[in-house]
Amino acid sequence: MNKRKYVYPLLIIIVTIGFYYFEGYVDNQKSYSTKENGDSSELGFFYLPTSTTGAVVVHNNYTLSYSEKHEQAEWVAYELKREHVSSNDFKRPYFEEDKKVKSMSADWRNYKKSGYDKGHLCPAADRRYTYDAFEETFLTSNISPQNHEFNSGVWNHLEQKIRYWAKVYDGVYVVTGGVLTDDLPTIGYEHVSVPKYFYKVVLDKSSSNPKMVAFLVPHQDTKKPLEKFVVAVDKLEKLTGIDFFTALDDKIEDRLEASSMAKEWKF
Image 1 (tube, rainbow, N blue to C red):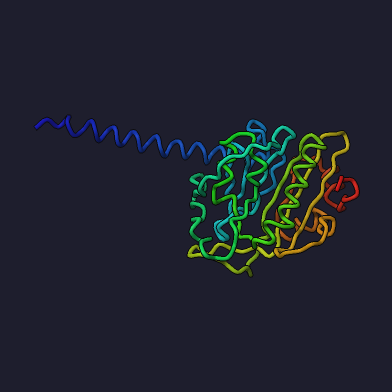
Image 2: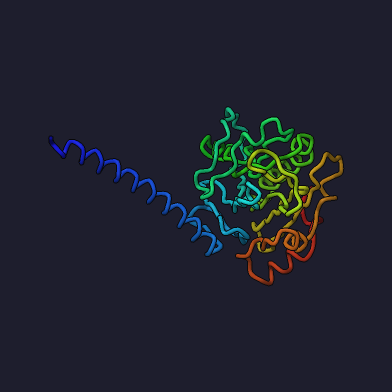
């Protein structure tokens, strides 16, 4: 019997599997290198927050820190440039698990019949400049359970306001997520946490006098104006344990994070 007939196919299989795991290793090393350096400028991302989980994942159009305990990102960070704001009308793709998350992100079926929306953290509407960028927002690492009235109401209003600022200030940096604590209710068989609050931190560094604004919004339907949810970044850092925009000069960071600065933004 010719042993080569079986050896060659076996070698091909082994080499293929080896490349697959090597590629995954390189991706993970790139992600963790980004976390350690606090900056992923080569990929177009800057001023990344600290990660409390160590599970930082770099995608082409946003970066996130995944919490396996809560089965969602503790934060998603991205730059929203003026030219990113687009009216392209792409067909919505299906949600998929994030293969870059080592522990695998939550299955979208956890949301089925839960009564909650699959709420985007990096909004799909912020990534309409190409279909690939748009599609990338439909990973389950980029969603959190959101009440429909909240998702389509005050949260949507805030997302629209940030797109407006991106055009006015020629680009902003955004960090967003749910406040993840130990006392949260969950949905689905993987126990996806339902945050009681969601936050956004927005940095405008387009001028010599940068400014920052942060929002802490209760997870409920509300008609209150956005200004009512502005808080000092220091407050968010105490709630989340996350240090935002660590790449800023310390003096600038301390000044920006100590006050709410709402008056400096065009509401």
